[in-house]
Amino acid sequence: MILVDADACPVKREVCEVAIRRNVQVILVAGQYLRVPDHPLIRFFAAGDGFDAADDAIAAVARPGALVLTADVPLMDRALKAGAACLDFRGREMTQANIGNVSATRDLMAELRPGIEGMTGGQGGGPPPFGPKDRAAFKNGLDRVLTRMGF
Image (cartoon, rainbow, N blue to C red; front, side):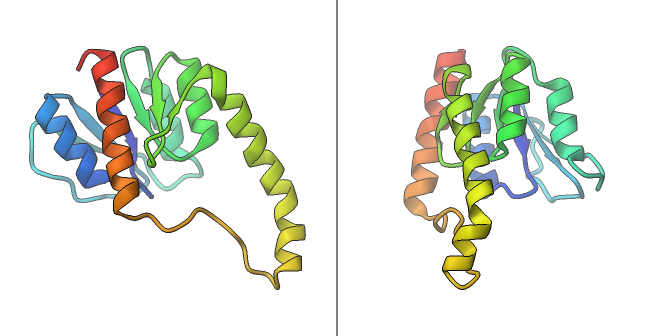
């Protein structure tokens, strides 16, 4: 089963394509309704608009044998602790071995951001735009993890 943090997921189409090809169930979880492909393997769950409602819904069902797709580092940490595999939207797999480094970097950048924005005239950073190379890297990462998981 693939659990997708779908609110800001830029690769929903790619996830659905790969899941259908590999015969894997997908549950797209979001705060509000999203249109999803009409296919028996693809489902949608509206978690509600509460703070972290989608994250909480995903964490509640994350388990060994599940793959969680998200860019949310705290959700990745929760899913990994539940035994699920995790992949971000750029195709990078998170593990117990590397989540601490990712989390520490995220926390450091959050602390530095106000100073950096002050130096740059208030222009925040953020990830680079999502492009075709990112989509290809994601699909490669998704195929790699699903193969390892036996799907």
